[in-house]
Image 1 (cartoon, one colour):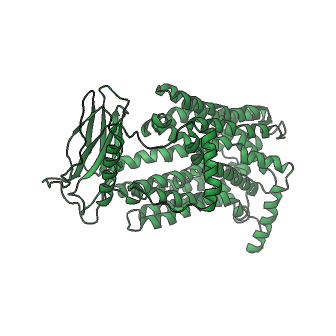
Image 2 (tube, helix red, strand yellow):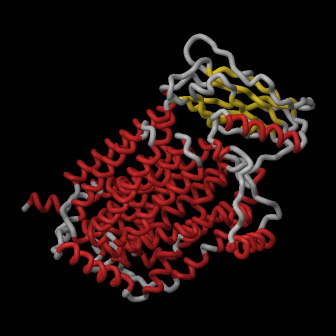
Image 3 (cartoon, one colour):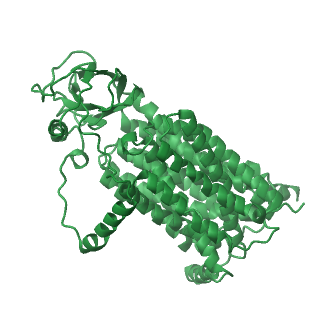
Length: 620
């Protein structure tokens, strides 16, 4: 009797954080890490966007197989089984990365991961409601949200850092390129004539035409810029240093469709003329900033079939220097003795002395990512074993009897439609679809805004800057906000704090309006603004999760919660799909104002929400 009681009443701190860490990690691996992996392995942006976007589908349609999880076996069984299956899928990705057809086979395993992860979500969310009473659900909702976000930070931060470290551990010696500006000097840009490199003895290494480039500050003509830029693009693509699908120009455009002529183009013109910032928003660099060329090649031929990818980034110095050519060059036995070309440009507004240092690193990228995914696989196998022994055994978590698959799907219809027969279903749908309307668009453009150059409306931060902000002060404030929201809701109930929470998740978005107009250079100020926005998100998201739990209450809570999260996914996916298109038309300033306008519908919708004052409150 004592043993069963112990298994039923295990401390939630022993399984809630680990369960939601395990729920968030495969999601970020499929949706974010996969994109970075394919980018590092040289897949074109077109293919990356097309194929990885489809991986979101299992989370949108997961309500349709949630009855299987609700009826077949127990939630506990599904959690452990899916974690072990996710571990096997990660091992499959690791094993297929080094192969010739890695793109096709890794995508197959990512699909397995996506469906396994979505199924795990159904079971974990249902188990959370079965394993905790109403008060503990409210108390731990901030904890579960926080550890879900910790998993996302782990995938986007620590895993990428690890893979980058491993990439350089087995690579060639890094290269360093020093750039300096020369005020008052005039230089003539000429296309190089020597296009071949010389073989050198010793270990394989890179050979640069120059270690240092001096760039005059005087402007150049647009004709000169275009001539040199096109030559570099064509030369690197012709010799196989870059993916020609991504980098070659121009791209032949197909004839526009009827909808493009009569709907899309008029809409774009209307938005640009009436809501645009008065200029085209483009990622092109200024065409009158002076430029400099640098040739690079290998000292000898690599082994047949071996590819050496050189990745370049600015290590330190003034951000007025930019790399215009591809930041990833691939060398092999066919092009090792031909020069790849790097093209640097100086900001035309710079008239003083300045310097910057670019570093290039070349490592065994497939091996690095293979080891990273094997590590992830081992982690999930350990999580599966841990939860096998440490998850509680709620009395309400039992296997339901059914008459085969026919009985399962007959039951599904009743479970599915019972969700839409709820009282005030219009309000429920409005909250689920609109509560994150502003955030759904902000989350897609926040990082690009921070990374984009100031000339096109961004803040010009480095990738390291953005990672540091979100991984330190951002994560800390997100955690504090989530924990505080859950604690307060358990003390006073959801109804008491709902208005404060919906304001908290929306109002801090004003930070980005301020950033877009002022474009501050203070790293401290930018960090403080993002910290405020992350705290508001952590605090405000608590209300949404508690409302989901409230809506799902009843006999079919697992299925209803899955339907709710599926609707939430639709509310995030559709607005997010159009956010980039809209931003490019109207610019960052007006886009963030639009985001603030999108925070009005959820605030108005909350006026119609009816929740018992006692829901979520500690009854002791």
